Length: 237
Image (tube, rainbow, N blue to C red; front, top):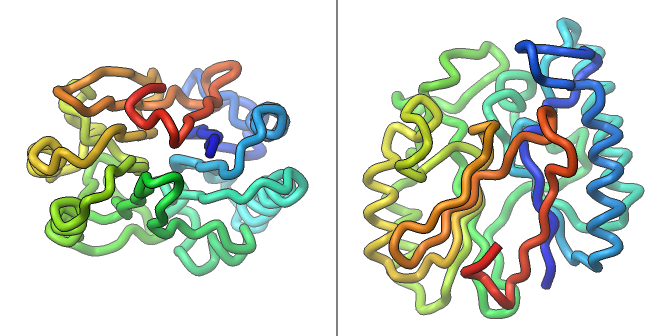
C-alpha cells in the first residue's frame, strides 16, 4: 500500500507567524497534497501532527479544524491524524477527533508491516497535554515500556509514526525526554525499518544502523512538503 505523509501544516487564519510560517496557505497545500495522494493511488494518508495552530479565538480554532476536516473528507482517502503539541495545546483529544470525524491513530498491519503510532503529547510528569498549554520542549512517551515490549514481542517488521523526535541527530529541544532509551530499544528490537517524525521543521533524513529516520519538513514553511511511502519497500523513502 502507498501511504501519503505530511507534517506541521499549522493551519490557522494567521497569514504569518514566527517570521516564516505561512499558516493560512496550508489549507491550499493540503488540497494539493491530497490531489497528489489520489494520483499516486494512496490507500492511507498520515498527518504527523501540528495540523493546526491557535487563532486567538476558540471559535476560529474550531472553524479552521473544520475546514481541514472538509478537505480530508472530500479526498475520500482514509486518514490518520497524530496529535502534535500545537493540536493538543488547542483542543483536548475528544474534541479534536470529534471535529475531524475520527482519524484516531490505531496500530495496524499492512502488507506484513506493522504501523505503530506512539502518543507523545505528554509532559515528563506523565500528564497529558491540555489546552492550558505548557512548555513545548517538555515531551515524553509514558508508554515507553509497553511500546518497546510490543516491538520485541512481535515477529512482524514495523514502521513507527510519531510527532516528536527520537532521532539523536535532531536538536535536543525537539527530542523526547526519553528519546535515548527509545532509540536504543528500537535498535535492539531489529524490527523497525523506518521511523517517521514531524516537529523539527527543517526536516531530516538519516540512517542509524538498519533504521531509516525520516523527519518530514514542515508544510507551513515549504512547498510540496508531502511524500509517499510504500509499505512494500519499508526501508526506503
